[in-house]
Length: 387
Image (tube, rainbow, N blue to C red; front, side, top):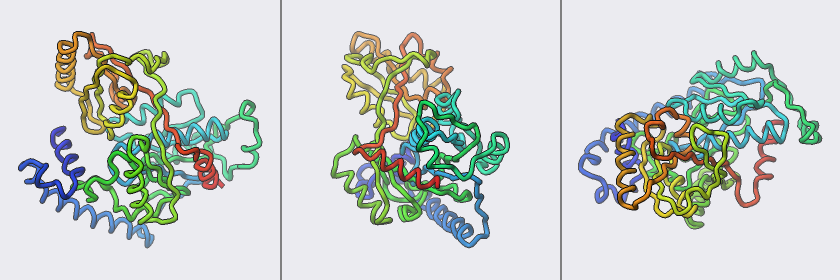
């Protein structure tokens, strides 16, 4: 299954002009099947949107404002970091208790990470495919505040602010395609490192919806924008504005803050711990290049990598492959290498990491940051959706 995912991913991100010269005969042989499946998906997607548009399928309206954070392609777009950024701001800086609604896809790695980050806070995490039912359960249990007194919240001194346990806002994680729930703000995340692939719909391409769906958005955020050239950024912006010429566009990045060594999650290690070290980056995330580029900037002696498909559950054969690569690096450089993973990989199944002993595992922690001094402008956009 992992090989099939890798093959489909390679096809999806191979430019049309390079298909014949780049892909193997095996890859080329499954393209007709993928293309047919993509065509059927497009028909089903259009039919579903039509049913919602004409009211044949009803939309759920929650009694609190809803902020949706989604994307048009699979994985690596920064949805969950953006959800965490918004939830942190609402709870800590604005005094509003948010409810995060997430599917818990792929073993629930992102949901587990959010639960670990927000433990002991007013932020609530609702996990389940039926997000309307999940929201109803949390709203019944904790109650809700509506309408929000925006002026009153703004005037409060942060140190004296009391955050109500009642839910004031719902945040839809991966909400773009969850059209059965009404929302007050639609934020679309874009991965600057691999924005559209071959521009086909799933499974032939990486698009979950056509690029014209930017017309439904209230804001676009180009994530990992610091890792690409200004020219590439301009092309991405142009593509977005072609679909929605008045859409506000923001840039974001993941800023490394520290490492931790499992299982000591609370002990923060400096980013300098990998300086002049041999590092093996092991990840099963949507954008593994972003991890590797972040580590390379920290001054290690050498960086190697093992990439798996997004949400991949590490098995015993994976551990054997990782340890074999570690032994190779140890013999080549004469010193024991360090394994670096993301928090998402850690939270997916941290128990299996014990199988990597005696090698050291470090987990990189990052925070999303809005670039170009536009954070205040972005927060004003959020505030408008709460009114």
